Image 1 (cartoon, protein in one colour):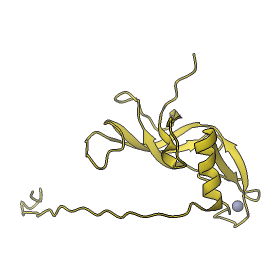
Image 2 (cartoon, rainbow, N blue to C red; image 1 turned 135 degrees about the horizontal axis):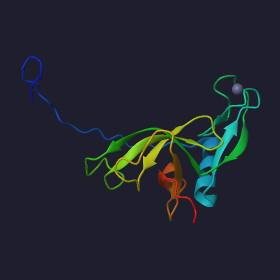
Image 3 (cartoon, rainbow, N blue to C red; image 1 turned 45 degrees about the vertical axis):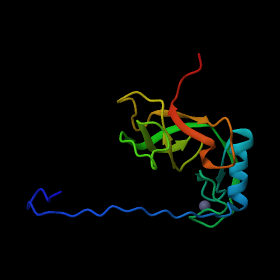
Image 4 (tube, helix red, strand yellow; image 1 turned 120 degrees about the vertical axis):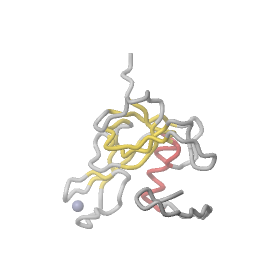
Length: 156
Ligand SMILES: [Zn+2]
């Protein structure tokens, strides 16, 4: 590999960092993940002071510190931004390519979260388009209980 401007050789080191970890989801995170796992529902929280609806839920408003209230959200929302992955990597591709990483703002929420997108045609994804969640058949209390989001298919 060489620097395209100077022609100077650039050496590339390949390596791998694997960092297994475990953490307790806490009271708020546990309630959120239970709703995904057991009822396939998204929960957010609303700050009664600012009126901001957070998803993923926050127990306390990060802006004013007020304790938030639970609120149910839709399982569809708007794709805020995304990047498509077209290159397969045996360890790093959670879905068949092409898939995308995107920021999704669920209907009823003011904040977005990162998730996967799949089942889209080449060139179909657009910022601002509506997407819907596809839940896993077997769920275990993780954000991956949502397999991915896909462009909203209107019910026929
Ligand atoms: Zn607030």
